[in-house]
Image (tube, rainbow, N blue to C red; front, side, top):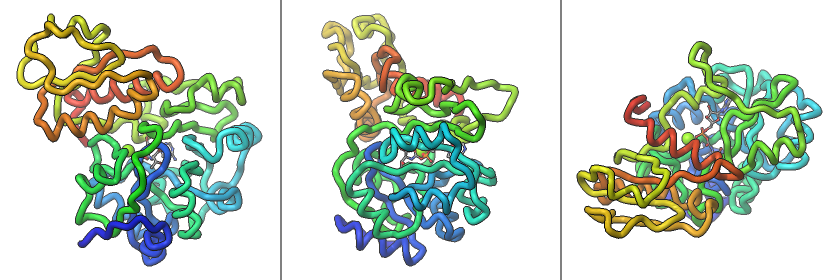
Amino acid sequence: MKTVLTTSPEKAAEFIKCGGIVAFPTETVYGLGANVFNEKAVAEIFEAKRRPTDNPLIAHITNRKQISELVIDVSLKAGLLIGRFFPGPLTLVLKKTKRVPLISTAGLDTVGIRMPGNKLAQEFLLACDVPVVAPSANLSGRPSPTTWQAVAEDLDGRIDCILQGEATEIGLESTVVDCTSDVPILLRPGSISLDELRSVVPETISYVANEDISPRSPGMKHTHYSPQARVVVVENPCLLSLSALTGKAAYIGLTSPETQSLPLPVLTRVCDSVEEYAHALFEFFRECDRLGIATIYCEKVPEAGIGAALMDRLRRAAEGEKIGHD
Ligand code: TXA
Ligand code: MG
């Protein structure tokens, strides 16, 4: 299949209306979208990404009216979170309506909903005129794409269209909160932190993985965000020189690595803030793979604000080789 590149949200939306699959930018990462109600198109998303079918998709909306097409009941607490954070990088999991096909939710009776704040995403979704389910637009197991070029690297020839926008503003995927019970549960950390959620709904808790029960957010059991290189999280980049560096190494963090370390990292990115680090991470991973880097050293950051989401992604990437790719 030939993948059409366009900067026109209306042209991209035409593919959705005809049952196609389209990659589009959001403020977090690029998504790969299909009409939520079109089972055949949704099945194609799983195929194009090689995504395990037990991993549910997020439905993206442009207005509050679409919420009632997707979910049966918006609790008071969910309503408060919607009021404060929609549009934005927040996904709420709620009980789905019968209309939402099970393929979109991987057989669950719940659905994740999110209203992106990115202007081009909003124009695209408005032109689609239906909610659009979209996972991140990467091959399953690879880092999420933050540029349209990264989408093309993974999916060119496998999808109908790429809506070309800017590099995404945040660079990490949305915060996911389960609102199906009385106490909202943070399932995936993102740029909206637990503290920010608690400033609106103080009871909100963080999900603690328990190996005995199946994960609340099925996606969390799959390997994510992994480059081919080995990822090592380091407390202090000055200690790099002590590590047995074999093969080509790269470094990303907030402080400059010790220059005496040998061999020197072939690629070094020193960021001015945790936000910049989060924004740069996935593209840095991809660049390392392009250069055939063997080991990527990533500096640890405090788990405050987006730092919690960044550490979550770093830990997952570092664990990748142990868990195996999906
Ligand atoms: O920022 C984002 O959320 C991006 C952009 C494109 O919106 N999308 C994204 O989608 O990251 P994906 O499919 O890569 O990750 C969705 C996550 C997975 O961990 C999935 O298990 C979880 O959300 N999720 C989706 N629906 C769910 C549901 N009904 N119940 C529990 N978890 C759900
Ligand atoms: Mg993903």
